[in-house]
Length: 210
Image (cartoon, rainbow, N blue to C red; front, side, top):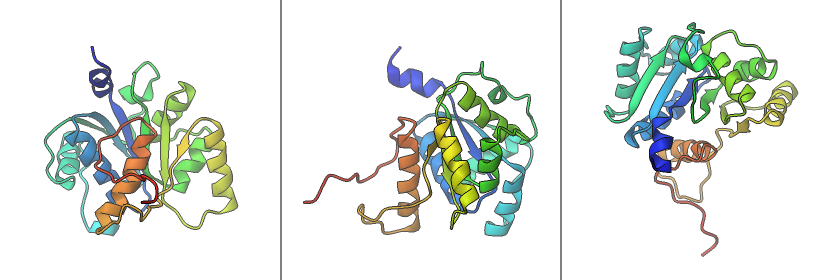
């Protein structure tokens, strides 16, 4: 069994919290499924409100309908494997450390989620799944989307970094000469996936001054 095959058969958990910037989650899902990865997805309760506020779109609650919804939002991608979980299902597979994964990406990550994770609080499936990654010593990558950071935010992020999480703020670069909003978003998504050793996004990487 090759390393690439093993990596793609283990699922990656994606948590989508109620922060602004759902396009980050949509683009991550698009590229992962196009690269034939298996994705276990859980969106927090607040995400329903964010979809309504930002895009005037109603996200379905039923898991199979939600799978179709995310695929549609990601441009109708048909590849990979996607399984969605209700936010309140704390008995789901991803709530257990015995369920093996590649790790977890929380994108975007709200400061409320950051605070609860830093305090060891698991009030829903997203938080429980993230807590499991930390306790099992697996990769947990957080993409906070907030500005400015208060001292409380910074201390919570520091606590999580000290516990082993990787913090990748939604801060794009310009050296790859972005032309669209998607170019800026994709840079952040690619750098977040780099922390999970996943390289599935075409990205002009820094090669030094020419």
